Image (cartoon, rainbow, N blue to C red):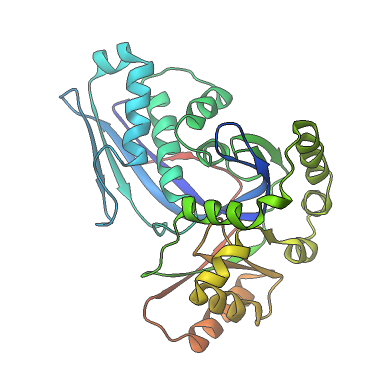
Length: 315
């Protein structure tokens, strides 16, 4: 095998709770994450030189060492130098469909695809947990992106507990192209405003994780109760992002005004999503939001829950 092609789904957060601070400077989180059928395609093939190249269809995505896909390939080359030396360098092409700087883990999904792809091309035989351990060195969302589907993520987001797949629900995504929210800014601002609410004791943090795992959102997922899931959507970061970015608040309000199960900002934003029971309802909401906010900078997508993370496709 000299090349492989993979699809890398975006993710949304059905639940995001900031529990407290961690010794490593990150936040202790409890999140329910969900893959959606808005995907990038990643093509990886060998090249004759001992280099790593990244190409992307989107001009706003860097192709240098700052790109997470590049960093994933470099990490694999460092951990498995014999494979890199014997098989040579790789070129990674990203067909970008997931919007950038959107809170949808597009860059993380690309990095996850590179880890999975090189594991296949180099015939390393790494298990999914082993790949996720490597992924955690690159970013908190990347371990989830490897396995995908529906999952509870704890720690700084790297500890993944799979939940039953929630296929059947449709999603409307909305993002202003000219708007980006810095994830470090969002978490830093939340800490400045709400750290007095943090749980600092490790035992109490662990107990809070158990409460979330046994709580209403996870219970609704096990029961496949879309109505209840919609009502339980939660994101702590809305408390700082919505006041600072009125466009996001306006979009969220417009989506919530339709026939939907629930509406929420994903991650640190600025993407807003709404859950719908059918594709027809989702398309009606998309059209209604377009009529309410006739802004050429607003992109809207109709998609659905996706049951897996990174997967290979036939060329």
